[in-house]
Image 1 (tube, each protein chain N blue to C red):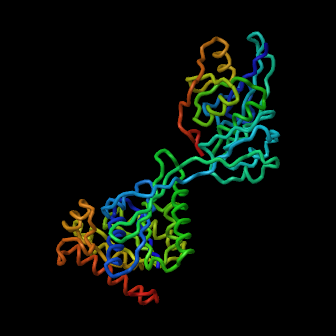
Image 2: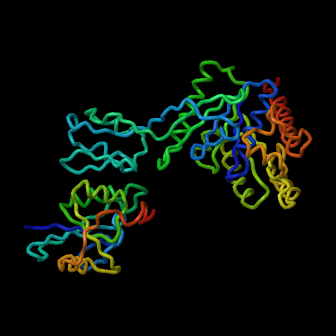
Image 3: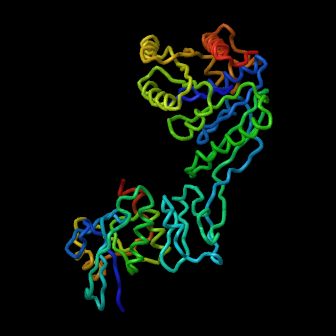
Length: 305
Length: 130
């Protein structure tokens, strides 16, 4: 089963929910794989209290012109949709790499095979096991723009794991970046269930509506978590409005000191080894969310342990 | 020796009396002026293929300038891809800071030696905006 945790707005608690839901599944004996797809700010390992390991570079195509083979015909530059190849009569094409989308069209259509595959590193992926949860994480190299290449690389690794043994993990949780852009879309596309995490503010609602639009376009099952639900007493009003819009709620998490402390210490509050108050509002809220998740799994014939 | 200069022009008509366009990649056309001994001996106009492009306009416009035979260009602003392209093609860019000049007035400033060579981009990408 694959759950994608997203939300539109930044800082709503997506990663907080991702690590705690992962921890609750683990506590119940599920094999859990957590993938951090927020490649511009990958920090799931900090919330889990782990370290980055097994660093692998993510390569990105760039054209390399072979002057021995190039006949200066200009076909590559004429067909480059982003105009990343500068070509004038009687000269070799000059790659303008900041414009290159990495599509390899030039490489494929060159009649003289004069364009060679070259690569630059645009980021890295990591794999580590923290407290019995397998974590995969991507990191975009600062100043690089092609974040989707890192997300795609993580998904290729995921596909490899699934093709080798589809039963290796019972639950796969994908944690997305804020926003409703292509990185987020790639991760929502894979989901059996999408959980947007929002907060009862105007910003939270605005960004939730945008992400709901994307999820609807992709035709995915959705249940929302409202985090910091007791913020300034907006809870009832906010939940009512979501209900009126036909948005299903998985649960809400009140403001809670234990959650803040666990966040700062890098020990998920719901981990069975954590020492936080089992009767606290935050703890009970997460427990309720997990029960609602198990109910959803049962109703949709997902395997429940 | 003849010097051929391209001036970004605000309309498709171009020519000495057209307004100079402060934008390079997204001007409508280039007025191509040939100078001999500080005299204008020929004026031609070539459309800018890049003026409606979403991206890479600086690259396309630089190609058009090069193909017109020009080795120098007078500009108001240049983005990073445009200046890289012009440098790669060994086309010198002279900077004019005043607005609302005609193409002829820009050429006169050049002939009076009042324009300096622009060494690096002075606006960000997509400045001329689509």
